[in-house]
Image (cartoon, rainbow, N blue to C red; front, side):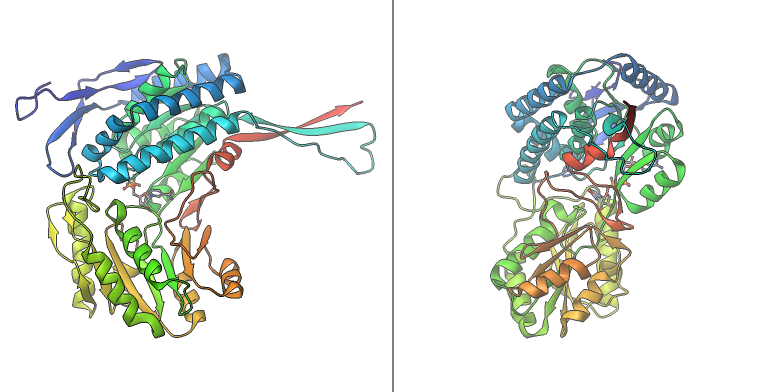
Length: 480
Ligand code: NAD
């Protein structure tokens, strides 16, 4: 197919039962920095989704991979991904607008997620259950974990490789089959993952990719009740819809956050805290579910912290994501950058002050630091999902905890303090899925349990925990 510049555009199909199927109906994928069309993607019809689920169910019922086979396929996938790292990273530079150093880091993390998933395939176990109750003499009981069946995986645009691996890796490790619908803005990297898994030895029928928009292709998936479980990462609004549309089927929902980070006056290293808050508020152009967004700083160190943060922010290089010196590239679309710019303007209109940034060129929003914000401003109370942080003073640590908890969201929070008792209090009083001490909310190791409370979702990811979510615990009772 020719694109506007007369060059050939790659066309990606849907991957169903081991075949790539190109449809008449396609949609474009744009380079998020240049706006150029880089590929066309086949849109899966209801019939395509139906065929993918039929094949996934048939495969689940008729073919089994042993734990060692699953381990080997996932390890081989990790190996091929590492051999093709640069090519895969460059795909994300184009379709996500991710800066090359972050794209490489995401591939590296995806490799670790694949390895951890492979390892889990070999240690899925139940437990012995003592039946210490009258009437249970001469009975032996234990549990086994069995795969749930066909898993529908729906993924977001911002970490389209590692977050897809976080679903497909554990699902295959646990012995399930998968129908994956990647984000429509960034589907190429998911197609590549399917291609690589096939090369790594995954037989036809275990993984399918159906492309398209959420309200069409995503909805077709939700309506197919042969899918036993959904694993979703994305916005709270869509998460709520998925939960209500899937009845009593299993769901794992990894949703948003407006991450708070508290810097107490006794923070062990204020320079480090300022650097982490700023760089992790702006990496991936702020489009990470655990990006630093609200920074609560004790008044004793507030002015000096703002000064340090501004200095770090001003040193950040903004521009072409393909340039290895660039720290912050474009957001996913000009529309999203304009939305964030509007939120900044609204905050300024109500009294906030821009310490730096605030400017926009197309899809590029310059890293922005705000002070003088209030709790009702959108940049504070909603998920900004853009390179915008707000620094807010507090006098009393109880106020900082209260402000941090004053949110419908609860994924991860950070606290900088040298006080061990305070750190332990935070662990209990901050209402989040993860509390990170002396680092920012953005810290995530792929092997740790990860998931939120409140509107940030239900269920956990991290291969060990995802395998638990993706298996049923079955009780076995034997009369002896
Ligand atoms: P989104 O909710 O708009 O889309 C996510 C996926 O859902 C896409 O594949 C989309 O096509 C699909 N979808 C949309 N409507 C649907 C419907 N009606 N039925 C079925 N599927 C539907 O999210 P996004 O803009 O791609 O990603 C940003 C959001 O993801 C942010 O809120 C961010 O915090 C969240 N996120 C969370 C985590 C986490 O692990 N907690 C990680 C990354 C991103």
